[in-house]
Length: 80
Image (tube, rainbow, N blue to C red; front, side, top):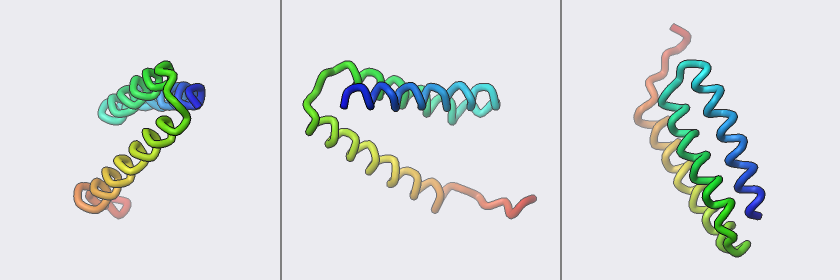
């Protein structure tokens, strides 16, 4: 399971680089922080159960944050 967190770190790093290339610095910073989080967790050698709990907490925070952003902060443009 620790390897899967390192794989998640790799993919979030790829996304961070792509966001930097696309001049989207806020998204790049968010993904860089996620990369550091996943890579550090990947080397902690925790139990399988703890990795599952951490991943569940991560998904909960992500879905709550994404729902808040898309409901209250995102301004629809309607193709303009």
